[in-house]
Image (tube, rainbow, N blue to C red; front, side, top):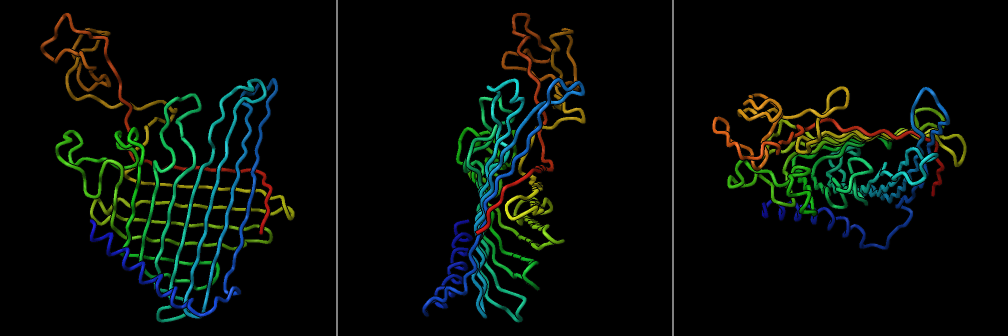
Length: 366
């Protein structure tokens, strides 16, 4: 693994050394295109004696984007930083003390450098991407425990490949040599195997050792990356930005492709006011979520071993009961044992994650 990391580091140093050599002559600042955008998106629902039901809520989300791109006759260097944070407060009219819930939280840093290949539309490129979040994340606002925080998870991707850019609106990047690192730098989360770290070859036997690429706080994957990006005004005053990213891990279940698809539609009303729609779709086979049925109720695992049901005092099989620490063994009940220590375990598994944000925004470009 260390040799692979050194190899990636050497290849990236080669690319960026070429950029530095090109810049030995006095810098031409006209080659740089720098800009950015800041926005606030607000949404509110107010209900007063509303017999149809529902709950008042308000949402405020801030987004900040900055980019610095440089193009010459032989090279291209694109850099961007996207930051977002926001909250939602339910029932704020009748309960001013209602808890505030995080609605958006994102850190996304990208850098891609390329040199022209056999024609003006193809580049030999190196890509770096870092993603994480600012704040603690909770399942619901009343939870005292958290399920995520800064660098839990954190993602870093290094990739070398070809970048096809037929125009300024569209690009396709493919890398057969990519490294993806997932970090969970919080032991309380890492100990539960959150976000794919700390996975054992045999989940029931910790002595079996970690899966390929796994450790307590990190998961290193070597594979292929595909990224397609489109950014343009689809109609007058309506802009669309869409990015699809796929990753396949060569050394562990390569058929399970990680997917991330981001979309942003911004409709400009005037110079400062916009209507915004943001969506984010994620699928990662290494991230397990709590499973629920169509009614939103938990789906529990089934214990295949016979256990005593405390309600019927009978041994049963294929039930959702799981024995606690003091449970009697099947076929050998002990009358004095504590049979009230029964738990149910909610099933977990990989699922598509989807987030949507829609609202009215105030935007300032620079």
